[in-house]
Image 1 (tube, rainbow, N blue to C red):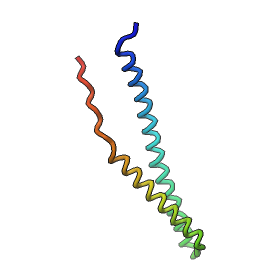
Image 2: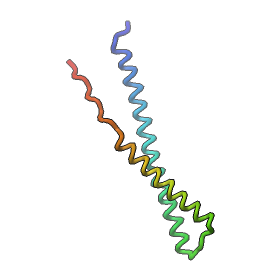
Image 3: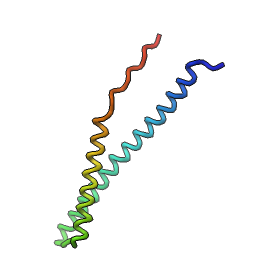
Image 4: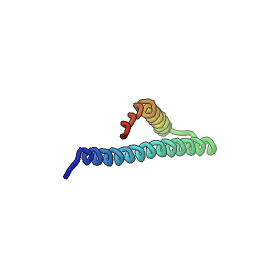
Length: 93
């Protein structure tokens, strides 16, 4: 015999799974940004230490990476400020 609680429990389980997946994705975004920034910094340091001169195309590529990283940071910051307040669970009796 099914009760009204069965669909609620199923929905709650699915939402818990969804929230876990979202958390994993957000962690991946953060990790990706940190890794990208580390690669950019290492490349910039390598270029500076070797007294290298970049071609216009290489400099444009490096500038594009810096721009992409900045855009990812902006998007990630937007996610953290767009999160609505969590609903208050109903009181149990």
